[in-house]
Amino acid sequence: MKTILDFHDKKSKKQKISMITCYDYSFARIVADSDIDCILVGDSLAMVMLGHSTTLDVSASVMAHHTAAVVRGAGDKFVIADLPFMSYRKGLTANMTAVEKVMKAGAHAVKLEGAAGNLKLVRHLVDSGVPVMGHLGLTPQSVNQLGGFKVQGRDEKAQKKILEAALQLQEAGAFSVVLECVPSKLAKEITAALEIPTIGIGAGVDCDGQVLVLQDLLGMNQGFKPKFVKTYLDGFNTIKGALNKYHQEVSAETFPSEKESYS
Image (cartoon, rainbow, N blue to C red; front, side):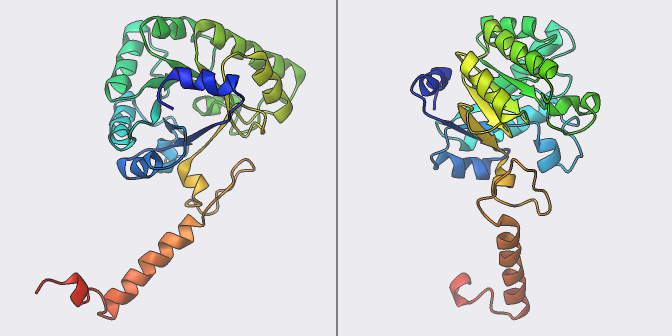
Protein backbone atom coordinates (compact mmCIF):
# COMPACT_ATOMS: atom_id res chain seq x y z
CA MET A 1 0.00 0.00 0.00
CA LYS A 2 1.40 3.35 -1.03
CA THR A 3 -1.40 5.92 -0.57
CA ILE A 4 -4.68 6.38 1.30
CA LEU A 5 -6.46 5.45 -1.94
CA ASP A 6 -5.20 1.91 -1.47
CA PHE A 7 -7.10 1.70 1.83
CA HIS A 8 -10.38 2.56 0.14
CA ASP A 9 -9.57 0.21 -2.73
CA LYS A 10 -8.96 -2.68 -0.33
CA LYS A 11 -12.29 -2.11 1.43
CA SER A 12 -14.24 -1.83 -1.83
CA LYS A 13 -12.72 -5.12 -3.03
CA LYS A 14 -13.25 -6.76 0.38
CA GLN A 15 -9.51 -7.40 0.70
CA LYS A 16 -8.18 -7.36 4.27
CA ILE A 17 -5.53 -4.83 5.34
CA SER A 18 -2.55 -5.99 7.42
CA MET A 19 -0.90 -3.36 9.60
CA ILE A 20 1.97 -3.83 12.04
CA THR A 21 3.59 -1.50 14.52
CA CYS A 22 7.28 -0.82 14.03
CA TYR A 23 9.60 1.52 15.90
CA ASP A 24 13.08 1.20 14.37
CA TYR A 25 15.09 0.90 11.15
CA SER A 26 16.18 -2.72 11.54
CA PHE A 27 12.69 -4.15 11.91
CA ALA A 28 11.34 -1.73 9.27
CA ARG A 29 13.73 -3.28 6.73
CA ILE A 30 12.28 -6.72 7.48
CA VAL A 31 8.70 -5.44 7.24
CA ALA A 32 9.60 -3.72 3.95
CA ASP A 33 10.56 -7.12 2.52
CA SER A 34 7.36 -8.77 3.79
CA ASP A 35 3.78 -8.91 2.53
CA ILE A 36 2.53 -6.57 5.31
CA ASP A 37 0.45 -3.72 3.85
CA CYS A 38 1.35 -0.79 6.10
CA ILE A 39 3.25 0.29 9.20
CA LEU A 40 2.11 2.15 12.31
CA VAL A 41 4.77 3.94 14.33
CA GLY A 42 2.73 3.71 17.51
CA ASP A 43 3.09 5.71 20.69
CA SER A 44 3.07 2.23 22.24
CA LEU A 45 6.83 2.57 21.80
CA ALA A 46 6.69 4.22 25.24
CA MET A 47 5.87 0.82 26.68
CA VAL A 48 7.45 -1.59 24.18
CA MET A 49 10.74 0.21 23.56
CA LEU A 50 11.20 2.51 26.56
CA GLY A 51 9.70 0.44 29.39
CA HIS A 52 7.02 2.85 30.59
CA SER A 53 3.76 1.53 32.04
CA THR A 54 1.55 3.64 29.73
CA THR A 55 1.83 5.46 26.41
CA LEU A 56 1.75 8.89 28.03
CA ASP A 57 5.49 9.48 28.29
CA VAL A 58 6.46 10.13 24.66
CA SER A 59 6.59 13.52 22.96
CA ALA A 60 6.09 14.58 19.36
CA SER A 61 9.87 14.90 19.04
CA VAL A 62 10.36 11.28 20.18
CA MET A 63 7.66 10.14 17.74
CA ALA A 64 9.37 12.05 14.93
CA HIS A 65 12.73 10.47 15.85
CA HIS A 66 11.34 6.93 15.63
CA THR A 67 9.22 7.72 12.58
CA ALA A 68 12.28 8.92 10.67
CA ALA A 69 14.14 5.71 11.56
CA VAL A 70 11.24 3.54 10.40
CA VAL A 71 10.76 5.49 7.17
CA ARG A 72 14.44 5.03 6.29
CA GLY A 73 13.93 1.26 6.37
CA ALA A 74 10.31 0.94 5.24
CA GLY A 75 10.81 1.10 1.49
CA ASP A 76 7.52 1.84 -0.23
CA LYS A 77 5.32 0.80 2.71
CA PHE A 78 2.68 3.32 3.82
CA VAL A 79 3.69 4.69 7.25
CA ILE A 80 1.28 6.16 9.80
CA ALA A 81 2.63 7.93 12.89
CA ASP A 82 0.78 8.37 16.17
CA LEU A 83 0.26 11.83 17.57
CA PRO A 84 1.20 11.32 21.23
CA PHE A 85 -0.60 12.33 24.42
CA MET A 86 -1.64 16.00 24.53
CA SER A 87 0.16 16.85 21.28
CA TYR A 88 -3.17 17.58 19.56
CA ARG A 89 -5.06 19.17 22.47
CA LYS A 90 -3.10 22.39 23.04
CA GLY A 91 -4.48 24.80 20.47
CA LEU A 92 -4.14 24.92 16.72
CA THR A 93 -0.60 26.30 16.45
CA ALA A 94 0.89 23.81 18.92
CA ASN A 95 -1.14 20.99 17.39
CA MET A 96 0.07 21.77 13.89
CA THR A 97 3.67 22.05 15.09
CA ALA A 98 3.45 18.50 16.47
CA VAL A 99 1.90 17.22 13.25
CA GLU A 100 4.55 18.99 11.20
CA LYS A 101 7.29 17.21 13.16
CA VAL A 102 6.07 13.70 12.42
CA MET A 103 5.07 14.45 8.83
CA LYS A 104 8.45 16.03 8.04
CA ALA A 105 10.04 12.94 9.62
CA GLY A 106 8.53 11.05 6.70
CA ALA A 107 5.11 9.82 7.86
CA HIS A 108 2.45 9.57 5.19
CA ALA A 109 -0.38 10.05 7.69
CA VAL A 110 -1.06 10.64 11.38
CA LYS A 111 -3.30 8.80 13.85
CA LEU A 112 -5.08 10.40 16.79
CA GLU A 113 -7.33 9.02 19.51
CA GLY A 114 -10.99 9.90 20.00
CA ALA A 115 -13.47 12.11 18.17
CA ALA A 116 -14.83 14.47 20.83
CA GLY A 117 -12.85 17.69 20.71
CA ASN A 118 -10.79 16.54 17.73
CA LEU A 119 -13.16 16.88 14.78
CA LYS A 120 -12.29 20.49 13.97
CA LEU A 121 -8.59 19.59 13.98
CA VAL A 122 -9.20 16.52 11.80
CA ARG A 123 -10.92 18.72 9.23
CA HIS A 124 -8.11 21.27 9.39
CA LEU A 125 -5.46 18.58 8.95
CA VAL A 126 -7.25 17.04 6.00
CA ASP A 127 -7.71 20.48 4.43
CA SER A 128 -3.97 21.03 5.00
CA GLY A 129 -3.03 17.87 3.12
CA VAL A 130 -2.45 15.59 6.11
CA PRO A 131 -4.24 12.21 5.96
CA VAL A 132 -5.77 11.27 9.34
CA MET A 133 -6.51 7.85 10.81
CA GLY A 134 -8.89 7.79 13.77
CA HIS A 135 -8.74 5.53 16.83
CA LEU A 136 -11.77 4.54 18.94
CA GLY A 137 -12.70 2.07 21.66
CA LEU A 138 -9.83 1.50 24.07
CA THR A 139 -7.79 4.66 23.56
CA PRO A 140 -4.60 4.10 25.59
CA GLN A 141 -3.86 7.81 26.04
CA SER A 142 -7.10 7.98 28.07
CA VAL A 143 -6.14 5.04 30.29
CA ASN A 144 -6.56 7.12 33.46
CA GLN A 145 -9.99 8.34 32.35
CA LEU A 146 -11.06 4.83 31.35
CA GLY A 147 -9.88 3.29 34.61
CA GLY A 148 -7.35 0.99 33.00
CA PHE A 149 -6.81 -1.07 29.88
CA LYS A 150 -10.21 -2.71 29.44
CA VAL A 151 -12.74 -3.55 26.74
CA GLN A 152 -14.96 -0.64 25.68
CA GLY A 153 -18.50 -0.61 24.29
CA ARG A 154 -19.99 -3.30 26.50
CA ASP A 155 -23.39 -1.62 26.96
CA GLU A 156 -25.81 -0.16 24.43
CA LYS A 157 -25.13 3.47 25.34
CA ALA A 158 -21.37 3.07 24.96
CA GLN A 159 -21.80 1.20 21.68
CA LYS A 160 -23.96 3.97 20.26
CA LYS A 161 -21.37 6.56 21.30
CA ILE A 162 -18.52 4.70 19.56
CA LEU A 163 -20.56 4.24 16.37
CA GLU A 164 -21.46 7.94 16.32
CA ALA A 165 -17.82 8.88 16.85
CA ALA A 166 -16.77 6.68 13.93
CA LEU A 167 -19.31 8.35 11.65
CA GLN A 168 -18.14 11.78 12.85
CA LEU A 169 -14.52 10.97 12.07
CA GLN A 170 -15.52 9.77 8.62
CA GLU A 171 -17.48 12.96 8.01
CA ALA A 172 -14.51 15.05 9.18
CA GLY A 173 -12.33 13.41 6.54
CA ALA A 174 -10.51 10.54 8.27
CA PHE A 175 -9.42 7.88 5.76
CA SER A 176 -9.57 4.99 8.25
CA VAL A 177 -10.40 4.18 11.87
CA VAL A 178 -8.70 1.82 14.33
CA LEU A 179 -11.13 -0.02 16.63
CA GLU A 180 -9.38 -1.30 19.74
CA CYS A 181 -10.80 -3.75 22.28
CA VAL A 182 -14.48 -3.51 21.41
CA PRO A 183 -16.97 -6.37 21.10
CA SER A 184 -16.81 -8.12 17.72
CA LYS A 185 -20.49 -7.48 17.06
CA LEU A 186 -20.03 -3.72 17.50
CA ALA A 187 -16.94 -3.69 15.26
CA LYS A 188 -18.90 -5.53 12.57
CA GLU A 189 -21.72 -2.98 12.81
CA ILE A 190 -19.32 -0.03 12.58
CA THR A 191 -17.44 -1.60 9.66
CA ALA A 192 -20.68 -2.05 7.75
CA ALA A 193 -21.80 1.52 8.52
CA LEU A 194 -18.61 3.20 7.33
CA GLU A 195 -17.37 3.84 3.81
CA ILE A 196 -13.80 4.11 5.16
CA PRO A 197 -11.98 0.98 6.37
CA THR A 198 -11.73 -0.14 9.98
CA ILE A 199 -8.53 -1.63 11.41
CA GLY A 200 -9.14 -3.90 14.38
CA ILE A 201 -7.06 -4.85 17.38
CA GLY A 202 -9.10 -6.97 19.74
CA ALA A 203 -12.18 -6.18 17.65
CA GLY A 204 -12.92 -9.42 15.83
CA VAL A 205 -12.52 -10.69 12.29
CA ASP A 206 -15.10 -8.49 10.56
CA CYS A 207 -12.97 -5.32 10.55
CA ASP A 208 -11.47 -4.37 7.19
CA GLY A 209 -7.99 -5.01 8.56
CA GLN A 210 -5.97 -5.94 11.62
CA VAL A 211 -3.03 -4.43 13.52
CA LEU A 212 -0.70 -6.00 16.08
CA VAL A 213 2.36 -4.79 17.91
CA LEU A 214 5.35 -6.38 16.17
CA GLN A 215 7.01 -7.49 19.41
CA ASP A 216 3.75 -9.14 20.53
CA LEU A 217 3.37 -10.99 17.24
CA LEU A 218 6.97 -12.20 17.56
CA GLY A 219 6.48 -13.38 21.15
CA MET A 220 9.25 -11.16 22.51
CA ASN A 221 7.44 -9.90 25.60
CA GLN A 222 7.39 -12.95 27.87
CA GLY A 223 4.45 -13.03 30.26
CA PHE A 224 2.41 -10.48 28.26
CA LYS A 225 -0.42 -12.21 26.43
CA PRO A 226 -3.69 -10.27 26.17
CA LYS A 227 -6.65 -12.20 24.77
CA PHE A 228 -6.43 -10.45 21.38
CA VAL A 229 -2.74 -11.23 20.76
CA LYS A 230 -1.60 -14.22 18.71
CA THR A 231 2.12 -14.99 18.73
CA TYR A 232 3.65 -16.33 15.52
CA LEU A 233 7.13 -16.94 16.95
CA ASP A 234 8.66 -17.74 20.34
CA GLY A 235 10.92 -14.72 19.92
CA PHE A 236 11.91 -14.39 23.58
CA ASN A 237 13.34 -17.89 23.91
CA THR A 238 14.71 -17.98 20.35
CA ILE A 239 16.73 -14.81 20.92
CA LYS A 240 17.72 -15.84 24.45
CA GLY A 241 18.95 -19.15 23.08
CA ALA A 242 21.12 -17.38 20.51
CA LEU A 243 22.59 -15.11 23.19
CA ASN A 244 23.34 -18.06 25.45
CA LYS A 245 24.99 -19.95 22.59
CA TYR A 246 27.18 -16.92 21.86
CA HIS A 247 28.12 -16.72 25.56
CA GLN A 248 29.01 -20.41 25.64
CA GLU A 249 31.19 -20.17 22.52
CA VAL A 250 33.01 -17.11 23.88
CA SER A 251 33.60 -18.95 27.18
CA ALA A 252 34.81 -22.08 25.38
CA GLU A 253 36.98 -20.08 22.99
CA THR A 254 35.20 -21.55 19.97
CA PHE A 255 34.24 -18.05 18.87
CA PRO A 256 35.84 -16.36 17.12
CA SER A 257 37.20 -19.26 15.06
CA GLU A 258 39.69 -18.94 12.24
CA LYS A 259 36.73 -18.25 9.95
CA GLU A 260 35.87 -15.09 11.90
CA SER A 261 39.48 -13.98 12.31
CA TYR A 262 41.89 -12.08 10.05
CA SER A 263 45.21 -13.63 8.95
